[in-house]
Image 1 (cartoon, helix red, strand yellow):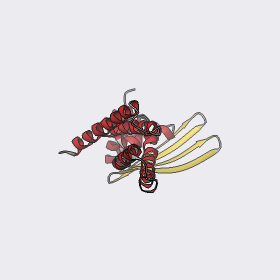
Image 2 (cartoon, helix red, strand yellow):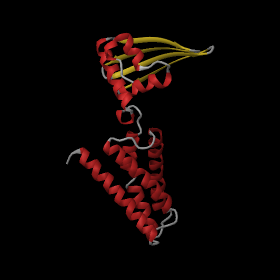
Image 3 (spheres, rainbow, N blue to C red):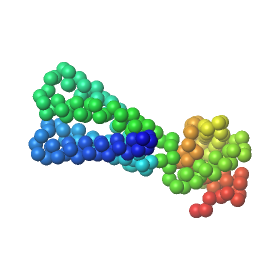
Image 4 (tube, rainbow, N blue to C red):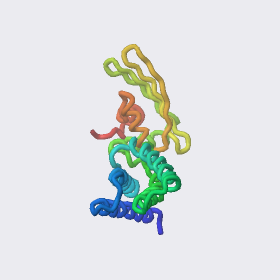
Length: 215
């Protein structure tokens, strides 16, 4: 069995588990707090499908906190099982929720990493590809641009499979400097577009005029 097929089976299994929980609640076979567990499970299932299919679901910033909630819920449910001695139906919900929250927590933590192509737009993917090609030929890319009352200087470098962006930007009389490292070139393009007034086209126009993106 391939890893991809295993991920698909896990997403299917978790979706079925949520459906069974919904049916149990509808027929009165679960505790009141099971509604919150079910809602959390549905959200987790959506994230698992996004991770499995390599598609963006909602926002990357929500998945790592959700993974933390799952990890905390596992500890709480485990404590409740051994310390509170709940009755049969509640015990089943606690054990099911606890056992099947560990692996999704790990997967959703990985899925929530912004520095991967799944969260990039088509423009960012194309821009990242262009920057990667330019950095393969150039040790570093440096560009300064002024636009109205904004000014930015960006220096991009590549070492192995890692990319580093150093930014100096000014607005009015304020100047700030910061650096970030990435492993995905599309995220590098996203960073430049989001935090400076410089576009990938600006860099391409300076270093490789034939590769300017069509807009």
